[in-house]
Length: 234
Image (cartoon, rainbow, N blue to C red; front, side):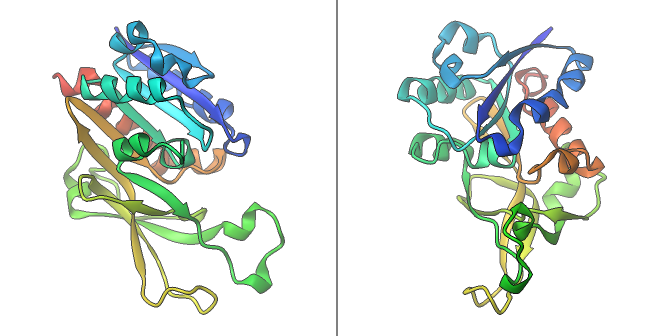
C-alpha cells in the first residue's frame, strides 16, 4: 500500500479541511494509506517523509520553518510526489524562496471586476475565464482527453520559470481598468520534475464548488496519481 500525507492549514478562506476531505475517499480507493497533518512540522520528520509516497498540500499563505522546507525539498528530490491546488500550493509560504523554487510558480494576483461592479466581497475577483489545454496537455496523463473549460472564479496570475511543463493556460485580457497593455497568459496546470520526484499543480480550486467541477476534479485526482512515487517508479 502506498502512503499519502495530506498537509492542510493556513488561511481559512480556502476551507483547507473541507477541501482536502473531498479527496480522502479517492486516495483510499486508489490504495493509499492516508495520514492527515494540520501542521507543516511533519515535513521536518525524516522518518515520516522517507516513507511518504505522495504529499497533498493545502496550506495558503502561512509560514514554514527552514528545517521543514528543507525536509520537503529533500523528500521530493528523493522521489516523494507533491501536489495541490490553488493557493494551497501556489500561494504558500511567500517568504520562503526555497519553497518557491521547488514549486516553480507563485501566485501574484487575481484580477478583479470593473470597479463599478464590485460589491466588496470575494466575488469581486470572480471572473469568467477559460482554461485552455496546451498541446503537451492533450498528450499528458493528467489532462489527456479533456477539452478547454470555462470557470467563473478567481483567475490566477502567476510568476513562473521555464522548468515547469505547462498542461493548461489561462489568459488575462486587456481591460480598461487594468494597467497592462497586452493579454497575459499564465500557466493554470503544470508539472515539474524535481530530482526523482514529481510535482503537479492546478491553480483552479478556490472554493468547494470549483473543486466539484468535473474537469477541475479530474485534473487534481489524476495529478495525485501521476505525482505519486508509486506511479513514477512503474
